Image 1 (cartoon, rainbow, N blue to C red):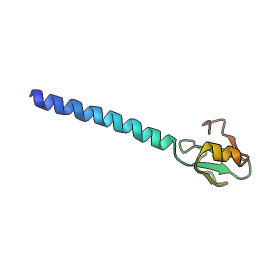
Image 2 (image 1 turned 90 degrees about the vertical axis):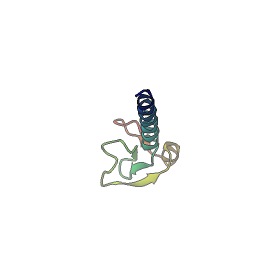
Image 3 (image 1 turned 180 degrees about the vertical axis):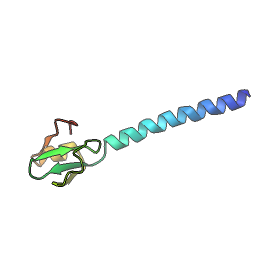
Image 4 (image 1 turned 135 degrees about the horizontal axis):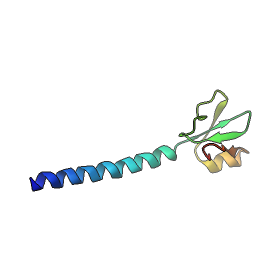
Amino acid sequence: MRRLRKCVCVWISMVILLSGFAALAFAAGPYHGNIQSRIYHNSSCRYYACKRCTAVFATAEAARAAGYRACKVCGG
């Protein structure tokens, strides 16, 4: 019983740790820029998949260097 409890605790710890890494990877994903408004969005933004979001950037710095500003909803 003690061994089972230890295995469950290790498993829960790994799930929590891996879910944190997944959230970081999701947040750090590519950015989409709206070519008309010159605003860029991160992958968690509700405007990320807009029709005019055809510019794709690997980083927020790349989007800013291209003349885009961060979205006020998601912070870019």
